Image (cartoon, helix red, strand yellow):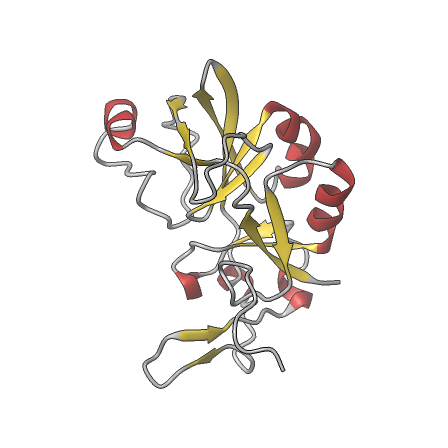
Amino acid sequence: MAIYRIIHEESYLTFEIPTGEVLKKLGREYPFHIKRFPVPYSAIWKPLSIRFKATDSGVETIPDIAARNGRLFFNEKAYNTLSGLLAQAGEFLPVNFDESHGYLFNPLRTAEEVDGVDRRLTAYDANQNLVNIAFDESKVGGFPIFRTELDTFQGIFCNEAFAEAYRQSELTGIFLHSDLSNPLGESYGVKH
């Protein structure tokens, strides 16, 4: 069994949630676009209109799945393929974009709820910056997708079942990285 960090592929557009849209439909008391703490929104949700924007790579393709700020976008194809696997891990919130429909997946499971952070291997530098994240797979391995308070709920992590389902589906937009502490998924340092 393995745990992976879900990372947005820069060769696809990423989504953004306009502040005005959130205020108009959800009100100031539900700042979904900036509040990342894993709380449910389905009871008050009104479908938001989101937009896609280019990353630095200048691409113009909307992916099947996009990851941003602790949440995932799913188009209809991705939703139909993976929603059954994720039903107990969070909530799918309907959104509209470019005359199409999709979903934002709000992961509600956390490593902390099952004491799943491996404190022996999680490390900080001298300035208390998080430099290594580790999980106890025997505790978080049952969550297809989860988040952690260690990175203020911005990262999205998955188990092998989700990873395999994603690989088999041939969906686009994310990649799975085994370096859980690396939010960009890029190699760094000097190669020898």
